[in-house]
Length: 175
Image 1 (cartoon, rainbow, N blue to C red):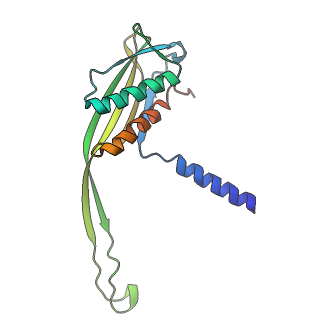
Image 2: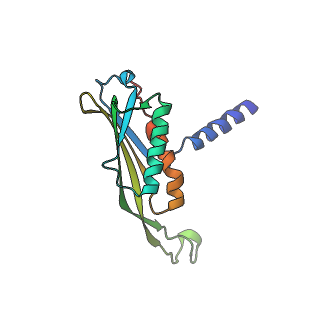
């Protein structure tokens, strides 16, 4: 019995720790040989962020690329293009008419009230493109969204987290 409780608790803990607030996806060129890429250079032409967030993104991206065995270089195998964007999101929530009941319990006569409310916020996304410098073709792309753009404290924590989540998919595991 203790064994089953331990397995249940372990799987619940694993399930909770693997939940991510971000939506992350990636794609890659089937023809690319990722073992040949050893060096990279980051291009930030399309990175429209303030200097603080730009430093967060670039520092974490460099750290992640180096953890994958890639080194920064002037004559790189990969050009790394980083982009950022955000969109305004409106959440609409409503509650069911429960709470005020009349005669006869929940199935009798009475009055119920429903409530609807909205919340608006900005959600950010980061896009990482890896381009083969010899062919100038995109070989890998990672996209992560779900950054709380409106909260500086959240961005400070979330930018490194989302970049790590995006780069978890590089190099791709071929099936």
